[in-house]
Image 1 (cartoon, rainbow, N blue to C red):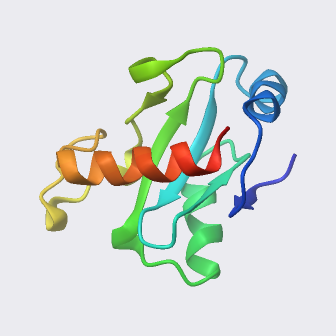
Image 2 (image 1 turned 30 degrees about the vertical axis):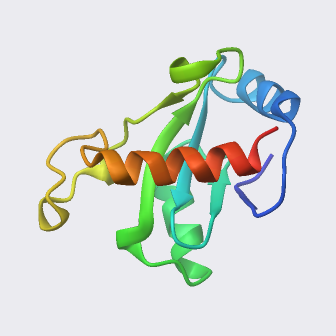
Length: 114
């Protein structure tokens, strides 16, 4: 699957298939917390980020995550990506340090993955 922008509900089973094709147990994703969309299917978060930027997203709204479709609860989303390192936004790690941004990411993922 090429990198795809998800703006409508995607079945969790599709993520399982994508994970098996790419990384084995995870799917890399970049979430636009303002537009309520995400990009999936890339080998690098940076590639997904680039596609969203080409489609009008703002870099400050984009956050990289990993989805583990075989897991549930807090284990489903991992906040870990090089694109998250943003000292200008007070995010100095690969994680997402701001709890409010984490909540926004989770809301978008929950709305799009069923």
